[in-house]
Amino acid sequence: MATSKLFQPIQVGTVTLQHRVVMAPLTRYRGDSKHTPTDLAVEHYCARGSVPGTLLISEATFIAHKASGEGFHTPGIWSDEQVAAWKKVTDAVHARGSFTVCIRSFGHSDVLHLSNNSRKRTLRSTLCAAARNAVERAGFDGVEIYGANGYLLDQFLKETSNNRMDEYGGSPENNARFVLDVVAAVSAAVGEERVGLRLTPWLTSLDNPGNNPIPVFSYLVAELRRRHPNFGYLHVVEPRVRGSIDRAVAGESNDFLRTIWAGKLWISAGGFSRDDAIKKADEQGELIAFGRYFTSNPDLPIRLQKNIPLTPYDREVFYVEESPVGYNDYLPADTSLSAAA
Image (cartoon, rainbow, N blue to C red; front, side, top):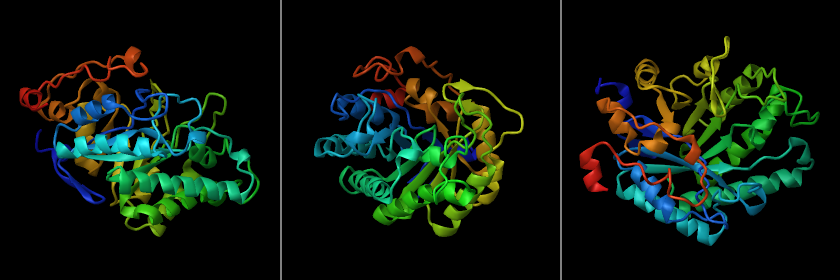
C-alpha cells in the first residue's frame, strides 16, 4: 500500500511535495494577547513538518486587528511583530524540508454591512497587504483564501445568508462576484500559482437550513478555472462534516465541482480514514487534508504510510489558550523522527 498515490510526490504551486497528506487549518488559540504567534507555534509546526515534503496549512490568520473579532488568541499577520514571529515558524518548517501556506481570514461579518464599494476596496487591499506579508516577508510558500465555514466570503456565496439585491447578491453571478474579486486581487499580489481557495459548499448554519450550493458554486469554480488557469488549488470540505460533527446526508456530494475542476489540483478535507484517503488519492489523484488527527500525531504521514496505529485526539485540549498541553506534548511513533526532533 505504500505505493499508493497518497504517498507519491506532487507539484503544488511552486513547491514539490513528497506525498499528498496535508495538514488542514486548525484554530488552536495558542497566540498571545496581541495576536502574535509564540515559540509554541514554532515547535508545533516544526513537529508536523518533520516528515519531509509535507504541506502544512496554517491556522486561520487575521488580516487586520478589526477583523480579529472574538479570536483573542488567534494569530494575525498585519504587524511587524507578527510577521517576524511567523518567519520563525516558516524557517523551522523549511529546515525540515516541508512547506507551509498561510490561510487568510476576514472573520465573521454581515454581508449587508459591506454597503459601499469603498469598504470592499479596503477589505481587498488589506487582504492583499496581508498576503504579501505572508509570502514576501514571513516566508510562506503561498496563501489560502478562506471562503468557508460561515466566514464573510462564505456568506456571500450562500443564498441562505446573502440577501443583497445589488450586484453582489440575487444570482449565482452576483453571489460569486466578491469572492472572484478577492481571488483576482490576491493572485495579482502574490501570483495565482501561490493561491488556494477553501470552500464548504454544503455547510449551513442551524438557523439557515435548505442551502442549495450547486448553482453558485458551479459558477464560481467554472469562472475560477477560466480566469486563473495557473491557480494553485481548490480545498473543499466534504459535506459529511458540519463543524465538529460528522454526518452523511443523502444527495450531498462535491462531485459536481470535481467535474468542473477536473485535471487541476484538489485538496479534500473532512473525516477521512486511512483507507478512505488512499482510495480517494488513487482513484482521483487528490490530496487529502487531515485536521483532528494531526493534533495528536505529528508524524501522521509516516503513520498512514506504515499503517501505525494513530494516537486518539482529545477535544478537551484543542483550545487551551497559550498552553503546550494538547499542542506540543504528542510524540512521533517513528523512532527515527523522534531522534531527529
